[in-house]
Length: 560
Ligand code: ARG
View 1 (tube, helix red, strand yellow):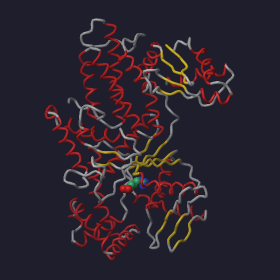
View 2 (cartoon, helix red, strand yellow):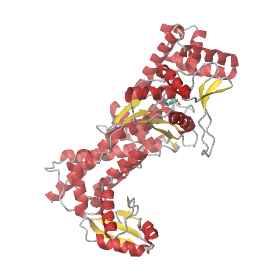
View 3 (cartoon, protein in one colour):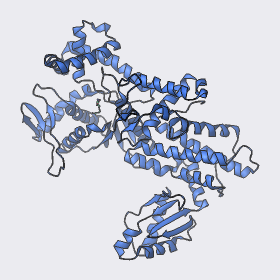
View 4 (cartoon, protein in one colour):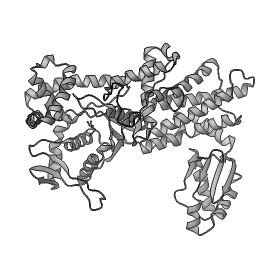
């Protein structure tokens, strides 16, 4: 990575100058008109060694300016050091990317990581929030795998909550026998019963009792549960298949139950379970808390377990089955407090795993309110896919000639890139029309760029995989510089679990490719050397697009 290389060179110089500094950090320049990379640690040095920043900066520059890696190193007031890379440095870096596996990216120490995302609730319709968890989670999973980690993905179905009791009660009320239950029944009954429970305390108690009896192993309810789960799960699978989202484990809350006794024993051994009005709770607040963290409710007074309990049981299960170093959860950020208290209980129990809750914001419509379809409903995901497809078809006549499988790929690309380009922690506005365009920061734009370059690559033949030392013009140089930023972009995205950093890199890369393409006409070039070099460069760019799109789980259509 270029930043590391420059950092090492600065460290050596600082040692020679007898002004060592910890954490020398070089960043990619945000003023590309001035330089490629920059170092602003001079101010720290000035404080540390009581000297004038410009003076220190000049000393550093003096020692670096004959270095072959730089075309220019300069100090700008009040004390920024700017680096402009030499052509040979850029091309060496590119050749390393070409000749080594995975673009010569340095891989971190390998960890075993469980990632919990998707999290749909059976018998309830999947909504846009679950879509976001699936898209963001899938991208994080693929990025971690790419970096060499041993990653285990779990969909963690919500399959043992009150909704099951409600649906069983509804089915019984309607006298629908087991073998006749359909998905439509579930879709109809759940909203009815959920409404009824809000209106009628009695019904709510009955449904809660059914749920509790089910959890305790009641045979009749267990048979219902199996049928409901199977129907619902196959529907959920169909949607995830469409989205190219897949899981190693299809476990759910119900699978955690056998492990809850173990957790209870551990909590009791450490005297962590307290009685509170008949319920059992675990206190998790700390003196240092700036806001109040409520206790985790472990067991209700009727004996039923809750969301936190099943999460603790699941952690126990994962720890026995996989001994993970780390467990990640991708859910709506409004669950932050829930996870904070679960993680605190794990700390109290002395668990060794590292835990991370990766929260995300809300998907809003163009009106800034939670996203709705044209019909004004909270959309079923299928309706959202269909609406996206129609919008894309209508956005240009050309699109209407596309085949069905390419269209599905485009729907995926539109929805996923719309989501992934946004910092996951923030809300964003899903504007189908805008995200369906082939211009701007959209999935179709990236795909279009790839296909355009791919066309040249299939028409022309290149002989080698090594670039010479020449860079031909500004657009060429800008593209090369962007390509060598890949490692920082990907690493940063992985470390912060923010796929948006990768999505935005990909967009910037495509902007550079298109600028290069507009300026440099490869097809009719007489200069064979130049042509060869540019073909190598474009092939490298397109490989990066393809691989990084795959990390975002976006496929490439045959044609568009
Ligand atoms: N089913 C939950 C929901 O719909 C999400 C589950 C997230 N995973 C977990 N281990 N709690 O909100």
